[in-house]
Length: 80
Image (cartoon, rainbow, N blue to C red):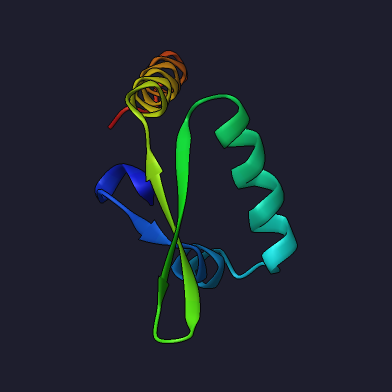
């Protein structure tokens, strides 16, 4: 989800995944600790919105995972 956008709000991530807030929080905290995402709290109109973005390192890691999956799929004859 994050690879296709500059930022995405926490609620959208949660809703698209269909999981609890705690699940998203735990995974985002781990990705942040690895330097793959940045998390910014933005205030407005009496509420705080959490915005999530991939870092350059996160985009590189994602691209690496996709490349590895393509190699696996190709070796299995699943590449199209």
